[in-house]
Length: 356
Image: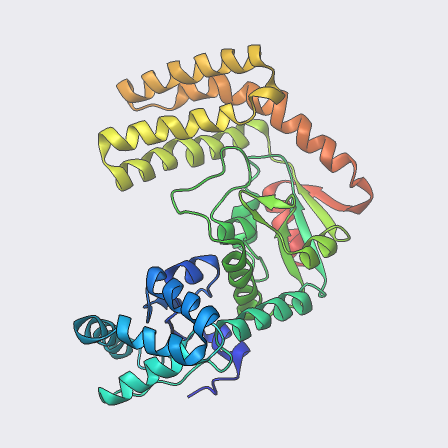
């Protein structure tokens, strides 16, 4: 079994971790292979924390034992045992490798089960993730740029050294970028990135030419600084090919995903709200009159899609949105990085260049 202090090996292998911190702590930051089976819930933890501040460690420990006893204790031990039976290689982890993981370990031993601890707890894993990212981004990298619809994410996913930042962030980066999977907390996003970098272990990274933010997640400063110096390759596919990609991704696939997740009636409402929200988010940049015109076209396209199942009518607002807003904005941003552009070509040509 991997040593409980070999944090890089644990993260790289995706070793299961039973995280016994309270749910609020887990939501603030966790590692990809961890799952939350808390020793104390949020209210119990808050009460114990207050007791610790007012009366000291001994009183807090006593209160903790009084709050988690009897049937409640048995339920939590049973959940840990079930997890260990599914993942016998799992580690126990609390905030700093202190009381909570040791109590969990002790209660499990009383039930006839043994599980190792993450020495130093989540704090050690978090510090390791930060260090991994800071080291990994010092390697050479190339950024894939191009206007929306050029298949940059797909291209990155096809390369062994590709790091799909948008996939890790559960967001596609634009005002229409949200997915049906909620975004992670900032710390969890950074931890997931570190694990991806550890598992790929490439000599040169391939990344999308992103802004500082991907939805609600921001790129770590060390990565942003390195990306600002990196070479850029630009994908330039024909407008019609880009439209076909976007039509498939934002209308066909998102419609399907909403229907699968929420059923026909609620799914349709959520899909419609998703498209309206994306347009509404950029209304000031479009100008309110143009926003109103495109919203009217969107409404008509939704009626046609609902009646006939076709997404063709969405092009009536998507084409001007690209040509009047997204393309000029991205070309302007790219013009400020002109000296870093080392290659331009179609999707296939850029993919070939990266593979050289």
